Length: 302
Image (cartoon, rainbow, N blue to C red):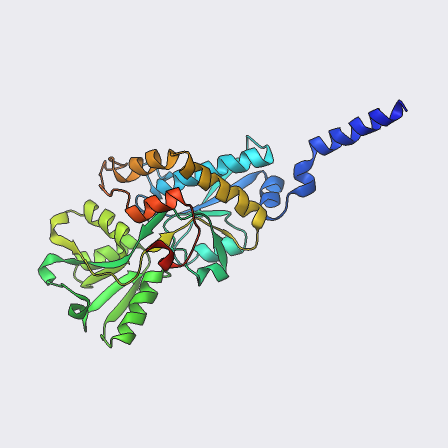
């Protein structure tokens, strides 16, 4: 009889010491076994994910990812978990998530139903739409004004796909050039190699704000898309990891912490140039903070 309580204590102690090793699977196990979590980031998706003047990745999406990292540390009871950084591009970000190189992709990636066949997304952290920027001198007022013109968009994005589809559907005869990154695409408009740069409107606003002569440019009032949700990417079919990630994002919204994070990057001067992009939180995104969703259907945000 005396040995029974001692045996029970031994069992309880064993259970208490090893829940992670007994239950952790997928990405959480990969992180636990390696002692590190790898964050995919961008170099010029301002203010979501970009390099500061010390070549350190910073931004709105990066701040949100750090809250997720804290949640993973807590879940695995690994307060000294190493955080590694991996630069990604529009073209390679999905493959690097899918093949296990990157655990979280923290940038300005559109969550849509097509991409959900390859990867998963956590709770939406921004809403944008596909528009274009032109020089005011070009006098481009509408989509029809782009007929027969050379336009540019960033390779590997939904934007270039939408522009290609609209070009064919409306028989516009546009010459669509792919660029390797947002700065290169904007420079093509700046130097006259393209008349318009098609991209998410928030990214266009930030690029114009940083231009040498911001007043020379205009962003279209017309949009090529419905509202598009940005989401942090993670591997598909990994419910345990997604639960930790989603809970971290939901807590960020429900606690009100999202308001200070948003204000820091969109309503205050941001490094390295101290530019204030002055983009108030849109009503549609305020709804997301009240009722968090990871939907990739644009109609869910109307």
